[in-house]
Amino acid sequence: MAILASAALCEPAGARTIQVGPDRLYTLPSQAAKNARDGDVIEIDAGDYPADVAFWRANNLTIRGVGGMAHLKSQGKTAKGKAIWVFKGNDTTVEHIGFHDAKASARNGAGIRLEGADLTVRHSLFRDNQNGILTGKNPESEVLVEHTEFDHNGYGNGQSHNIYIGVIRKFTLRDSVSRRARVGHQVKSRAAENIITDNKLADEVTGNSSYLIDLPVGGIAYIARNTLQQGALAENFTMVSFGADRKEKLHAQNALRVENNTFINDRRAGCRLLFVRDGIEPAVVSHNRFVGCKKMDGPIKSEDNTYQDRSALPPTSERD
Image (cartoon, helix red, strand yellow):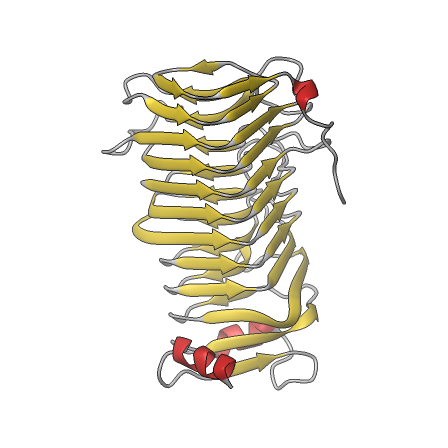
């Protein structure tokens, strides 16, 4: 009863609950998307939903898998040539949903494409898409991702990524995994503020990503308590990059703190832990564990970091 009462408090007044599943009135998520109204809760029964994609227009939606994860096996399809789910509305929450195999002719088919403002994603999975999450430019928008996995997303041209956040107000990634991005970055964000904490960002054995974290136009950034592993096949020798895009103007405020992370380098053909663009105030890099690499470039204030040979840790492994 307490759980039900708590759930009811989280739903806006007058909200409907729309149920989706093989034995429901709506058998496909796309049918619910066409009928959703502002404030609705969409509950999708666990299982696979092949070749189903959707364009969501309503605001303040909560869309969640129930009884387990609902997997959208898109079979390469996208809504409007953009994503498995495109969100035009604002204030959307997605929970317990798997996004698989999105492909678009523009080579940037995403699991989720955010065109509105404000998105929260929890306990979800993005695998084998050309982009995991892709957002547009909206300086009033915020994106929160937590307890979610991104695996093997990217077209393979270096312009699509596991996570690609556009120019928004704030991006938070926490308690999540981003692994084995195809040539692109594990995390790329142009947000004015970036909070990246308590994650695993890793190439593992077969991954060939470029940067593990790319913040190309700076901003206020806090990177803490993550495990960052650069693989032997990594396309770029830099693990974290801050302000590298000289074709675009930096944010008005730019400051980087990197603390209490573990960096692991398995790339033999050179490595760089961190690059910071000249002219930015020195990044504060403190209390990190650096394994197999020492190099950092740019204005950096390094404090109380430890350096160890790669042999200090077991060899990197990989799961399916």
